[in-house]
Every structure is written in C-alpha cells, then in structure tokens.
Length: 305
Length: 306
Image (cartoon, rainbow over all chains, first blue to last red):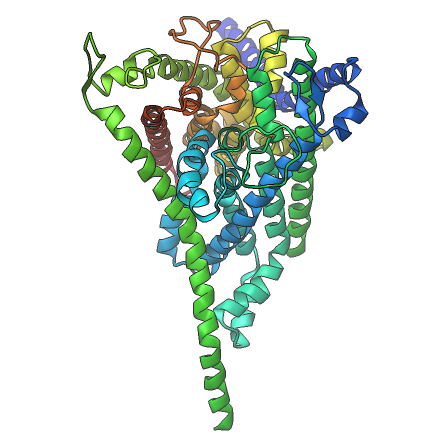
C-alpha cells in the first residue's frame, strides 16, 4: 500500500517534468523561429553578394532586375520603387476608408450596426490573398481601371494597389477603432457638454486623442502592403525596369521572389541566392516598420494609463 | 433672445457639414462592404456554372462530366472543362492534418508557459516581443525560411511535410496569442480555489485552468488553421506549383493545394479557365466560412461568463 503511494508520487513528477519542459521549449521556439529566419536569409544573402556576378554596389544602383536572363542583372532599385509605389496606392485607398470606418464604428454606429459590420470586416480580412488577386485581375482591371483610365494594361499597378488597399482596410479599421475606444469617455463627454457636435467631437477631440494608435495602424498597414505577395504577383505583372507609370506593369520585391523561385533556380546558383537577398531586403523593411508601429502604440498606451 | 437666435443660426449653418461628414463615413464603410459583396457575387456568377452543371466534353468521344463530384474528385487537366481539384483538395487536407497536429501542442504549450509559468523577467519579455514581430513578418519570408530549413537542411524535400511545417510556423504566433487570451479569461479564483483545496500549481493549471480555456484555444486554433489553408505564397517554395497531378500518399510526397491550384489556373489565358478558377475559389471560400462558423459556434456555446 505504502509502496504504491511512493510509486505514484514518483511517477507524477516525471510527467510533470516532461510537460513543463515541453511547454517551456515551445515558448522558446518563438525565438528559434526568429533566429532561423534571420540566419537562413542572411547566410544565403551573403553567398549572393560573394558571388563574382554581383556586387553590393550593383545591387543597390543598377536599374534592371533580370536574374534568370542570359546576362543577368541584379538591380533592386526598380523592385523597391515598384513596391513602394503600389504600397502607396494601397495606402491612399486604405487610410481614409479604414480611418473613416473606424470613426463610424466607434463614434456613430449603434451597438446593433456594430455587431453586423464588425463580422463583415472580419470576413473581408479572412479572404485569401489569391482571391483578391483574381478579383483585381479579372474584375477591378476590366470594370473599373480600364474604363476610367485609358491606356491601362492587363497587368497594372493601379488595380494591384487598389486590391491591396481593400485588403488592409480591416487591419487599419480595427486597430484605429481600438485606439478610439481607448480614449477616456470624459474627453468626449466634456466636448459634448461644451456644445460641440458629433463631427467636431470626432475630428477635433477623439482623433487627436487617438492619433498615435491611428498612426501605428497606418504604419502596420503600410508594412502589410509592402509584404503582400499574391495580389501583386497576379495583377501587378512583371516589368523589371524602373517605371513610374501606374497604368503599366510593375515588379515588386515579393512578386520577383515568387517569379525567380518559379524559374529554373537550382540550389546554390546565384539566382537561388538572389531570392534570399530579396528576402532579407523585404524582411528589414517590414521589420523596421513593425518596430516603429509597436513603439508608437506602446508610447500612446502610457498616456492614459 | 439675441443669443438664442445666434445659437440656432449657427446650428443651422453647421447642419450641412454634419450631414456631409456622416455621408463620408457611410461612403467609406460601404466601399469596404460593397467590394466584399461584389467579389463574392462575381466569383459565384463565374464559378457556379462550372461547379454545379453537368455537360459533355470532347468532339469525337464524348465524356460526361457530372459536377460537383467530378470537379472535386478528378485530376487537373489541360482542358478547363475537365480539370478537377481532387489532388489539390486532398493536398490541403494533408496540410490541415499536419498543421493541427503540430500547432496545437506547440501553440497551447507556449501559451500555457508564458501565461502561467514564465517568470516576469527580461527573457520572457523578449519572447513576447519576438512573437509580436513574427506576426508581422510577410508570409513569403516564411516560405523562404521553410525552403532553407525544411526542404534543404532537414532534407524533407519539396513535400507536403515541408509545406505543413512552414504553415505551422506561420500561424504559431497567432495561435499563441489567441490561446493566451483564452487563459487570461479564466478568473484567478479558479486557480486560487484549486490551490486552496491542496492541488499543486501544476494540477491547478492542467486540471482546472486549461480545461476551462480549451474552447477559446480551439477557437484560436481553427482561426489560425483557416488562415493557413488560404495561404499561397509560402507553399510556392515547396514546389507546390510545379505540375503535380497525383494524390499525395505520404508526408514526403509532392503535393499541390487549393490556393496554389487556383493560382495556377488564373495564369492561363483562355476565358474558360476563369470559370474553373472561380469554382476553385468557391470551394476555398466555403471551407473558410465553414471553419469560421465552427469557431464562432464553439465561442458562443462554450463561452463562460465568469
């Protein structure tokens, strides 16, 4: 009897030990993922810059990106400019729509309307990007862009940018909504008591009070637009040179990563390593933006606590 | 008297501005909603014929196609009217199984550790900061990492296992955050009650706290899974885009998945492919909607008001 008790006492901690170690390891796995991302990207990128075909200077100054051509050129400039161009179009659309949707949701909508609109926005956020890409190519381009802007090609920066913009509206709307809701009620009540209308309260009191959260949402949205892949690959086309005409095709960092990997790129070739050079360029851009967004939203949280 | 007049006058002057502002707000919110509706309507109208009608194909030897079962079970083809989504559908199911069996233990494990056991020190804060940042890393980067780590380093090759593990890493941060929220929602009185009755910390957490947080964790898992099956970009590096026209039979076999198959079909120029890719998108959206509804039902059914 007493033996059994001893046994069970001993065996329980063994499972406990195992489970405790397992969950601890899974938590530390988060760090491992980051390390794996940075390590794999940077080692292959270093291989890329060490190859005789390419120099750091060429990477940042050449104006053509043609790694799978016979005479390959590795200039990242057109890719960065296309990426920023399309992301800017996306932001021109998503910032006002997202922000005004947030103002509507937090300041004007009744509880019932909120209960209907919030899930719809969540649904929009859940649409796979390949579907948005299809929609941009087969609906936005022929029905909107080509009708109103003559001279637009089948693949163009405008419809890709518009689709990316719609895709990030839910992100901006929900984060800005949270920021507006975090503003203390007293500010709003004070504004109403002084006789300001709903519009004045929203624009002159609530908006400035929540501005850091709103800016954080904008930065995060911009970062997501930069990292978006399938929409720009499907609808944005591939034009490997510097180009500022939004009616024609462009070539973003993400879509060239996809296209290079689709081509014949065996392990160890310069084109294969170029994937990772592009990867780390993209990673650094989004990483800095995400840090900035996180920093700004943290700073703002302190203000009202 | 005068002042009241002034007041009403200014109110009247203000009124148009108020209305215009409200109109701008309505317009913004409706653009988002109308776009979603247009998207769904456009896809339904181009895809439903391909997905639901029966027809004959072939000039000399006629072949009867009975949809939707033929679309769901047949192989891909060069003829848009014959092409089916079978291998991609099965590939997506394989991915889901791999993702669930790896993400659930890792995600809930990490969440339980961070929420219940982790000391409040710099290392813990570093892990948390890491998770926030990982959630913002573009999915295409995860694909590159998966290519280097699972395909090359681990030697899994361009297989459904590599694809599943890459998707696991992609959704882990989301699942961990959701599981932590579920654990946070369990009130401290449950922990204290268990401890007061003589349970060890471990027993209190694993027999009382975790079971009450399971519905929330499952909800987070389902939402993460629905994000995973819609992902295209990371899988491209797993060789899922090369012409795969067979059913995966082991974790190490090549595969394709629904979003990848759809992307493939979008690339073909003939008009009929539009219908075929829309049909694939309908299947994908139906799967996503089903999973989101399941998550919603679990949330509503098991959510406790402590």
